[in-house]
Length: 405
Ligand SMILES: [Zn+2]
Image (cartoon, rainbow, N blue to C red):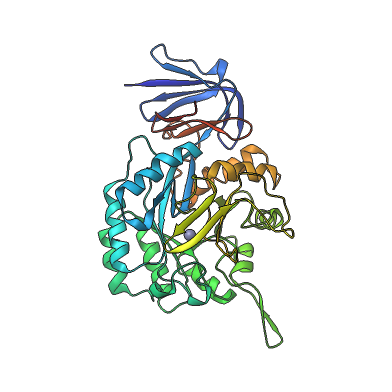
């Protein structure tokens, strides 16, 4: 039995901030935490002094296609290991590898890979697989390859879901033929159904909620918004998500995808409990600026923003664009930087920003009995950082997996 004590930390649980706190860990579990003078340290514990740094639950990324040179679509264990071991440097302790639309054969290969490796030594945990596509609306296809977009057919997806218990979330367009039936099946199996790349109108979004959809993928991207038909205004997915309490959503807060005003609008409508941060990142995340090839596309990673953009994004807030700079090509965001952005650009305090990357995604993915909050009996998935959100140390299941030198 191994005991560890983290001492001299400012603990962000994240429901409260405990200045000068101690956390006691036994094996992979948090045994106790609280103010220093009320939390005795067992004699046989290894003591780690964090010198007044912040300690929060490890970050959880529910939507990520790649990072640190690893790409989910390559269906390779090596690539998943690259992601898992790179992500802990950004404070991430759990992630949901996410596919793009591909052939069913390709998706099966990836699922096989994820099914076999839930835990990576020295890395973040794979909490399952997120299928983004292929059941999308061609009118909102975005950067997904239209060649692979298909209609949901139970003959395809029933065996897929049965064979691969790692599938934990599916992002789909509910309004396409078969989309509602898919939602019911996902709900029945406890898989999160998320509205994505969807051209639905308000009535269809309501039907989607009735048929099991609970979340909306990257708000403002790949979704319809209000349109005028003859003399009438027709509400789209965007306004429906802002309006409907039943739906949670996610934002890419990389300082490029959404200006602070739109992020504030989302938070004002949804509140601090119904939104999570996701990176939606691709393989170049974590690697820095330069020219990359993304699935055959020439892509440039840079931190420049056009004159009209609301903020002068700071150095190091990178984004990937097609080489002619006409569109974003996924993102190269990292979770630590997005938390910093939420504080610096959007005006949240640190515990509020941390909620969006910990307890909220844990609830949305139904993992909050294990991770996402610092409490007795929870997994010891923790990250330690300074005021600038530079990650100093990350712990997964009670093991230190990253230490900044
Ligand atoms: Zn995505």
